Length: 230
Image 1 (cartoon, rainbow, N blue to C red):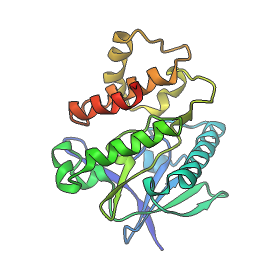
Image 2 (tube, rainbow, N blue to C red):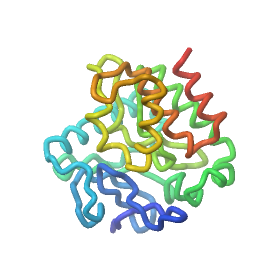
Image 3 (cartoon, rainbow, N blue to C red):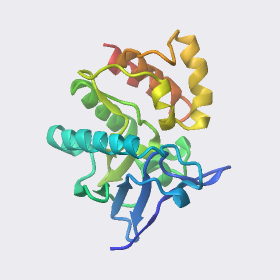
Image 4 (cartoon, rainbow, N blue to C red):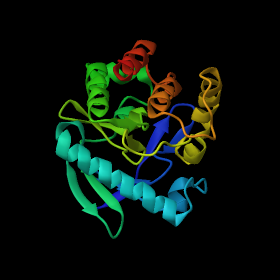
């Protein structure tokens, strides 16, 4: 099977890389999406976020740990894992076409036409994460595919367990696009959080939801926050 670089075509911006960390590939028949944990300069157009091989390895390991945990605990919430190539650091996932964001023309105005009950489904996924003691910060609409009418969650390299040592925002800025950082920093100040010091996972999760306010309807963001707040 042949695979090509995979991008999102964003109105007003054009062709954009699908992920800041790994290199995204899609099979020519659009049935397999590949997360390739490789620092590919051509794909990232010289704007590579992670150039440290040790850090890339850490991201790969985190992806596999939590993706396989989801496969064990909530397999209906993620795409079927076709293959995990440890040597090449590639995860092959079974999909049906482009991701949720791309299929929506990269605008929330079209979410309902792609998946009429997307809000209910996405909130269900978020609730499963919460029940499993997970804090997942990759919430962009391109972190979901639609398979047989059901949303499937991906991108677990930015996921943490409630049992882990706390993390700081500063150490994870490579995961956050410059555009999102522009939205994020005022909210960090408003909520009285520190960029440099480790923060409680709950505070980071709620902050993360707020940082995606431009990607989702306001009522959806409030419902997502409520799941973690109760």
